[in-house]
Length: 178
Length: 175
Image (cartoon, one colour):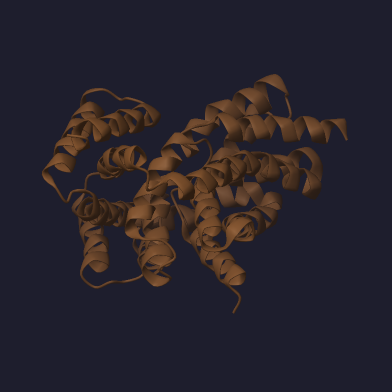
Protein backbone atom coordinates (compact mmCIF):
# COMPACT_ATOMS: atom_id res chain seq x y z
CA UNK A 1 0.00 0.00 0.00
CA UNK A 2 2.76 2.39 0.95
CA UNK A 3 4.52 1.54 -2.28
CA UNK A 4 1.40 2.25 -4.33
CA UNK A 5 0.95 5.64 -2.67
CA UNK A 6 4.59 6.40 -3.23
CA UNK A 7 4.21 5.46 -6.89
CA UNK A 8 1.09 7.57 -7.32
CA UNK A 9 2.84 10.58 -5.84
CA UNK A 10 5.90 10.06 -8.04
CA UNK A 11 3.83 9.97 -11.22
CA UNK A 12 1.70 12.85 -10.01
CA UNK A 13 4.85 14.97 -9.73
CA UNK A 14 5.92 13.89 -13.21
CA UNK A 15 2.50 14.86 -14.60
CA UNK A 16 2.43 18.16 -12.75
CA UNK A 17 5.88 19.48 -13.58
CA UNK A 18 6.66 18.52 -17.15
CA UNK A 19 5.86 21.28 -19.55
CA UNK A 20 6.10 20.69 -23.26
CA UNK A 21 5.03 17.05 -22.93
CA UNK A 22 6.55 13.94 -24.46
CA UNK A 23 10.30 14.19 -24.78
CA UNK A 24 10.56 16.62 -21.87
CA UNK A 25 9.20 13.98 -19.51
CA UNK A 26 11.75 11.26 -20.20
CA UNK A 27 14.65 12.62 -18.11
CA UNK A 28 12.34 13.39 -15.21
CA UNK A 29 10.81 9.91 -15.28
CA UNK A 30 14.28 8.39 -15.40
CA UNK A 31 15.50 10.38 -12.40
CA UNK A 32 12.48 9.45 -10.32
CA UNK A 33 11.90 5.85 -11.33
CA UNK A 34 15.41 4.57 -12.08
CA UNK A 35 17.89 6.70 -10.11
CA UNK A 36 15.91 7.60 -6.99
CA UNK A 37 13.39 4.81 -6.42
CA UNK A 38 15.26 2.04 -8.25
CA UNK A 39 11.99 0.48 -9.37
CA UNK A 40 13.47 -0.41 -12.76
CA UNK A 41 16.90 -1.09 -14.20
CA UNK A 42 18.19 1.37 -16.73
CA UNK A 43 17.89 -1.23 -19.53
CA UNK A 44 14.25 -1.95 -18.67
CA UNK A 45 13.54 1.75 -18.62
CA UNK A 46 15.09 2.31 -22.05
CA UNK A 47 13.11 -0.60 -23.52
CA UNK A 48 9.91 0.89 -22.14
CA UNK A 49 10.69 4.34 -23.54
CA UNK A 50 11.45 2.93 -27.00
CA UNK A 51 8.13 1.09 -27.15
CA UNK A 52 6.20 4.00 -25.63
CA UNK A 53 7.42 6.12 -28.52
CA UNK A 54 6.55 3.51 -31.14
CA UNK A 55 3.02 3.01 -29.83
CA UNK A 56 0.27 5.53 -30.53
CA UNK A 57 -0.71 7.87 -27.71
CA UNK A 58 1.23 10.16 -25.41
CA UNK A 59 4.66 8.89 -24.35
CA UNK A 60 4.04 9.85 -20.73
CA UNK A 61 0.76 7.93 -20.68
CA UNK A 62 2.21 4.81 -22.35
CA UNK A 63 5.31 4.70 -20.17
CA UNK A 64 3.42 5.30 -16.92
CA UNK A 65 1.21 2.27 -17.69
CA UNK A 66 4.24 0.10 -18.58
CA UNK A 67 6.16 1.12 -15.47
CA UNK A 68 3.07 0.68 -13.28
CA UNK A 69 2.69 -2.90 -14.55
CA UNK A 70 6.33 -3.61 -13.70
CA UNK A 71 6.02 -2.30 -10.19
CA UNK A 72 2.64 -3.66 -9.15
CA UNK A 73 0.70 -5.41 -11.92
CA UNK A 74 -2.67 -4.15 -13.13
CA UNK A 75 -3.31 -2.06 -10.02
CA UNK A 76 0.11 -0.48 -10.42
CA UNK A 77 -0.66 0.35 -14.06
CA UNK A 78 -3.94 2.06 -13.15
CA UNK A 79 -2.32 4.05 -10.35
CA UNK A 80 0.64 5.09 -12.50
CA UNK A 81 -1.73 6.24 -15.23
CA UNK A 82 -3.97 8.16 -12.80
CA UNK A 83 -0.94 9.82 -11.29
CA UNK A 84 0.32 11.13 -14.60
CA UNK A 85 -3.10 12.16 -15.95
CA UNK A 86 -4.79 13.80 -12.95
CA UNK A 87 -2.60 16.93 -12.67
CA UNK A 88 -3.30 17.89 -16.33
CA UNK A 89 -6.94 17.01 -15.92
CA UNK A 90 -7.51 19.26 -12.92
CA UNK A 91 -5.37 22.13 -14.18
CA UNK A 92 -7.17 22.17 -17.54
CA UNK A 93 -10.55 21.85 -15.85
CA UNK A 94 -9.86 24.95 -13.76
CA UNK A 95 -8.53 26.85 -16.76
CA UNK A 96 -11.51 25.80 -18.90
CA UNK A 97 -13.96 27.07 -16.26
CA UNK A 98 -12.25 30.47 -16.05
CA UNK A 99 -11.52 30.58 -19.76
CA UNK A 100 -15.18 30.40 -20.69
CA UNK A 101 -16.01 33.21 -18.28
CA UNK A 102 -13.21 35.57 -19.22
CA UNK A 103 -12.27 34.72 -22.82
CA UNK A 104 -14.23 37.68 -24.23
CA UNK A 105 -12.82 40.28 -21.84
CA UNK A 106 -10.97 42.97 -23.72
CA UNK A 107 -7.42 42.33 -22.45
CA UNK A 108 -7.78 38.54 -22.37
CA UNK A 109 -8.80 38.72 -26.01
CA UNK A 110 -5.74 40.82 -26.84
CA UNK A 111 -3.45 38.33 -25.09
CA UNK A 112 -4.98 35.48 -27.08
CA UNK A 113 -4.69 37.44 -30.32
CA UNK A 114 -0.95 37.51 -29.68
CA UNK A 115 -0.83 33.85 -28.67
CA UNK A 116 -2.78 32.78 -31.74
CA UNK A 117 -0.14 34.43 -33.93
CA UNK A 118 2.55 32.40 -32.17
CA UNK A 119 0.79 29.02 -32.41
CA UNK A 120 1.34 28.43 -36.17
CA UNK A 121 5.03 29.25 -35.68
CA UNK A 122 5.34 26.73 -32.84
CA UNK A 123 3.74 24.15 -35.13
CA UNK A 124 6.15 25.10 -37.91
CA UNK A 125 9.08 24.57 -35.52
CA UNK A 126 7.73 21.11 -34.69
CA UNK A 127 7.77 20.35 -38.42
CA UNK A 128 11.36 21.61 -38.67
CA UNK A 129 12.61 19.56 -35.72
CA UNK A 130 10.85 16.41 -36.94
CA UNK A 131 12.28 16.94 -40.43
CA UNK A 132 15.86 17.19 -39.22
CA UNK A 133 15.67 13.69 -37.76
CA UNK A 134 14.33 12.35 -41.06
CA UNK A 135 16.60 10.95 -43.76
CA UNK A 136 16.82 13.28 -46.71
CA UNK A 137 15.54 11.29 -49.66
CA UNK A 138 13.16 11.79 -52.58
CA UNK A 139 11.00 8.99 -51.23
CA UNK A 140 10.44 10.83 -47.95
CA UNK A 141 9.86 14.14 -49.71
CA UNK A 142 7.20 12.56 -51.92
CA UNK A 143 5.40 11.08 -48.90
CA UNK A 144 5.46 14.47 -47.11
CA UNK A 145 3.97 16.22 -50.14
CA UNK A 146 1.46 13.46 -50.88
CA UNK A 147 0.22 13.47 -47.29
CA UNK A 148 -0.02 17.29 -47.26
CA UNK A 149 -1.88 17.35 -50.58
CA UNK A 150 -4.31 14.63 -49.58
CA UNK A 151 -5.37 16.68 -46.56
CA UNK A 152 -5.41 20.11 -48.21
CA UNK A 153 -6.95 19.25 -51.57
CA UNK A 154 -8.64 15.88 -51.26
CA UNK A 155 -9.96 16.22 -47.71
CA UNK A 156 -8.80 12.72 -46.79
CA UNK A 157 -9.14 11.75 -43.12
CA UNK A 158 -5.73 11.80 -41.33
CA UNK A 159 -6.37 8.24 -40.08
CA UNK A 160 -6.40 7.05 -43.71
CA UNK A 161 -3.12 8.86 -44.41
CA UNK A 162 -1.52 7.27 -41.32
CA UNK A 163 -2.75 3.77 -42.22
CA UNK A 164 -1.64 4.02 -45.86
CA UNK A 165 1.79 5.41 -45.01
CA UNK A 166 2.26 2.68 -42.39
CA UNK A 167 1.29 0.07 -44.97
CA UNK A 168 3.71 1.61 -47.46
CA UNK A 169 6.45 1.31 -44.84
CA UNK A 170 5.68 -2.34 -44.14
CA UNK A 171 5.69 -3.25 -47.85
CA UNK A 172 8.60 -1.16 -49.11
CA UNK A 173 10.79 -0.19 -46.17
CA UNK A 174 11.07 -3.51 -44.32
CA UNK A 175 14.55 -4.20 -45.64
CA UNK A 176 15.83 -0.72 -44.87
CA UNK A 177 15.09 -0.89 -41.16
CA UNK A 178 16.67 -4.33 -40.86
CA UNK B 1 -26.21 8.32 -29.28
CA UNK B 2 -25.47 10.19 -26.10
CA UNK B 3 -23.02 13.06 -26.44
CA UNK B 4 -20.87 11.62 -23.65
CA UNK B 5 -20.34 8.42 -25.66
CA UNK B 6 -19.62 10.41 -28.82
CA UNK B 7 -16.93 12.38 -27.02
CA UNK B 8 -15.42 9.15 -25.73
CA UNK B 9 -15.37 7.54 -29.17
CA UNK B 10 -13.85 10.56 -30.90
CA UNK B 11 -11.03 10.79 -28.41
CA UNK B 12 -10.56 7.03 -28.48
CA UNK B 13 -9.94 7.33 -32.22
CA UNK B 14 -7.52 10.21 -31.63
CA UNK B 15 -5.65 8.21 -28.98
CA UNK B 16 -5.49 5.10 -31.15
CA UNK B 17 -4.04 6.79 -34.23
CA UNK B 18 -1.78 9.47 -32.82
CA UNK B 19 1.64 8.12 -33.64
CA UNK B 20 4.60 10.32 -32.88
CA UNK B 21 3.00 12.10 -29.92
CA UNK B 22 2.55 15.81 -29.23
CA UNK B 23 1.97 17.86 -32.34
CA UNK B 24 1.26 14.76 -34.42
CA UNK B 25 -2.12 14.60 -32.66
CA UNK B 26 -3.21 17.99 -33.94
CA UNK B 27 -4.31 16.90 -37.44
CA UNK B 28 -6.54 14.24 -35.88
CA UNK B 29 -7.99 16.61 -33.29
CA UNK B 30 -8.58 19.21 -36.00
CA UNK B 31 -10.46 16.75 -38.19
CA UNK B 32 -12.47 14.99 -35.49
CA UNK B 33 -13.30 17.81 -33.14
CA UNK B 34 -13.32 20.94 -35.28
CA UNK B 35 -14.32 19.79 -38.77
CA UNK B 36 -16.44 16.68 -38.30
CA UNK B 37 -18.30 17.43 -35.08
CA UNK B 38 -18.01 21.23 -34.89
CA UNK B 39 -17.57 20.90 -31.14
CA UNK B 40 -15.18 23.83 -31.04
CA UNK B 41 -14.40 26.63 -33.50
CA UNK B 42 -11.04 26.90 -35.23
CA UNK B 43 -10.27 29.91 -33.05
CA UNK B 44 -10.84 27.81 -29.92
CA UNK B 45 -8.68 25.04 -31.38
CA UNK B 46 -5.77 27.49 -31.61
CA UNK B 47 -6.55 28.79 -28.10
CA UNK B 48 -6.29 25.24 -26.77
CA UNK B 49 -2.93 24.65 -28.46
CA UNK B 50 -1.67 27.87 -26.87
CA UNK B 51 -2.99 26.87 -23.44
CA UNK B 52 -1.48 23.38 -23.76
CA UNK B 53 1.94 24.97 -24.19
CA UNK B 54 1.59 26.75 -20.86
CA UNK B 55 0.23 23.88 -18.83
CA UNK B 56 2.01 20.68 -17.80
CA UNK B 57 1.13 17.28 -19.19
CA UNK B 58 0.61 15.80 -22.64
CA UNK B 59 -1.25 17.89 -25.21
CA UNK B 60 -3.59 14.93 -25.82
CA UNK B 61 -4.83 14.99 -22.23
CA UNK B 62 -5.04 18.77 -22.18
CA UNK B 63 -7.15 18.96 -25.31
CA UNK B 64 -9.35 15.99 -24.38
CA UNK B 65 -10.17 17.51 -21.00
CA UNK B 66 -10.73 20.97 -22.43
CA UNK B 67 -12.91 19.94 -25.35
CA UNK B 68 -14.87 17.45 -23.25
CA UNK B 69 -15.60 20.14 -20.68
CA UNK B 70 -16.61 22.64 -23.31
CA UNK B 71 -19.02 20.25 -25.00
CA UNK B 72 -20.56 18.64 -21.96
CA UNK B 73 -19.18 19.89 -18.63
CA UNK B 74 -17.26 17.80 -16.11
CA UNK B 75 -18.72 14.52 -17.37
CA UNK B 76 -17.61 15.43 -20.89
CA UNK B 77 -14.12 16.19 -19.60
CA UNK B 78 -13.91 12.80 -17.89
CA UNK B 79 -15.25 11.05 -20.98
CA UNK B 80 -12.78 12.77 -23.36
CA UNK B 81 -9.83 12.07 -21.07
CA UNK B 82 -10.80 8.41 -20.59
CA UNK B 83 -11.28 8.10 -24.34
CA UNK B 84 -7.84 9.39 -25.23
CA UNK B 85 -6.02 7.09 -22.78
CA UNK B 86 -8.08 3.91 -23.26
CA UNK B 87 -6.34 2.59 -26.35
CA UNK B 88 -2.93 3.12 -24.73
CA UNK B 89 -4.10 1.17 -21.72
CA UNK B 90 -5.37 -1.77 -23.77
CA UNK B 91 -2.31 -1.87 -26.02
CA UNK B 92 0.23 -1.63 -23.22
CA UNK B 93 -1.64 -4.29 -21.21
CA UNK B 94 -1.25 -6.66 -24.15
CA UNK B 95 2.33 -5.67 -24.98
CA UNK B 96 3.58 -5.75 -21.41
CA UNK B 97 4.35 -9.47 -21.52
CA UNK B 98 6.01 -9.42 -24.91
CA UNK B 99 8.03 -6.26 -24.54
CA UNK B 100 11.14 -7.54 -26.31
CA UNK B 101 9.14 -8.83 -29.26
CA UNK B 102 7.58 -5.43 -29.82
CA UNK B 103 10.86 -3.62 -29.38
CA UNK B 104 12.57 -5.66 -32.08
CA UNK B 105 9.59 -5.93 -34.43
CA UNK B 106 10.61 -5.13 -38.00
CA UNK B 107 7.01 -4.65 -39.02
CA UNK B 108 6.48 -1.93 -36.42
CA UNK B 109 9.73 -0.23 -37.35
CA UNK B 110 8.96 -0.38 -41.06
CA UNK B 111 5.45 0.98 -40.51
CA UNK B 112 6.88 3.86 -38.49
CA UNK B 113 9.47 4.59 -41.16
CA UNK B 114 6.60 5.04 -43.60
CA UNK B 115 4.51 7.08 -41.17
CA UNK B 116 7.18 9.56 -40.11
CA UNK B 117 7.28 11.60 -43.34
CA UNK B 118 3.48 11.37 -43.64
CA UNK B 119 3.13 12.82 -40.12
CA UNK B 120 5.32 15.75 -41.14
CA UNK B 121 2.95 16.39 -44.05
CA UNK B 122 -0.03 16.19 -41.71
CA UNK B 123 1.46 18.62 -39.19
CA UNK B 124 2.38 20.93 -42.07
CA UNK B 125 -1.29 20.97 -43.04
CA UNK B 126 -2.16 22.18 -39.53
CA UNK B 127 0.48 24.90 -39.86
CA UNK B 128 -1.26 26.06 -43.03
CA UNK B 129 -4.80 25.90 -41.67
CA UNK B 130 -3.86 27.56 -38.38
CA UNK B 131 -1.89 30.21 -40.27
CA UNK B 132 -4.97 30.96 -42.36
CA UNK B 133 -7.00 31.44 -39.18
CA UNK B 134 -4.36 33.42 -37.25
CA UNK B 135 -2.83 35.70 -39.86
CA UNK B 136 -5.80 37.74 -40.92
CA UNK B 137 -4.36 41.18 -40.40
CA UNK B 138 -1.06 43.01 -40.61
CA UNK B 139 -0.45 43.08 -36.83
CA UNK B 140 -0.75 39.33 -36.42
CA UNK B 141 1.72 38.78 -39.27
CA UNK B 142 4.25 41.07 -37.54
CA UNK B 143 3.82 39.20 -34.23
CA UNK B 144 4.22 35.90 -36.09
CA UNK B 145 7.45 37.04 -37.73
CA UNK B 146 8.88 38.29 -34.41
CA UNK B 147 8.03 34.97 -32.74
CA UNK B 148 9.50 32.95 -35.62
CA UNK B 149 12.66 35.06 -35.38
CA UNK B 150 12.90 34.40 -31.63
CA UNK B 151 12.37 30.67 -32.20
CA UNK B 152 15.05 30.50 -34.88
CA UNK B 153 17.67 32.56 -33.05
CA UNK B 154 17.13 31.25 -29.56
CA UNK B 155 15.63 28.00 -28.52
CA UNK B 156 13.32 29.65 -26.00
CA UNK B 157 11.01 27.52 -23.92
CA UNK B 158 7.45 27.33 -25.33
CA UNK B 159 6.05 28.86 -22.11
CA UNK B 160 8.24 31.92 -22.59
CA UNK B 161 7.21 32.13 -26.25
CA UNK B 162 3.53 32.07 -25.28
CA UNK B 163 4.07 34.76 -22.63
CA UNK B 164 5.98 37.00 -25.04
CA UNK B 165 3.32 36.59 -27.72
CA UNK B 166 0.58 37.45 -25.21
CA UNK B 167 2.39 40.65 -24.26
CA UNK B 168 2.93 41.48 -27.95
CA UNK B 169 -0.80 40.94 -28.50
CA UNK B 170 -1.67 43.50 -25.82
CA UNK B 171 0.92 46.01 -27.09
CA UNK B 172 0.01 45.75 -30.78
CA UNK B 173 -3.76 45.51 -30.51
CA UNK B 174 -4.44 48.15 -27.85
CA UNK B 175 -3.29 50.90 -30.21
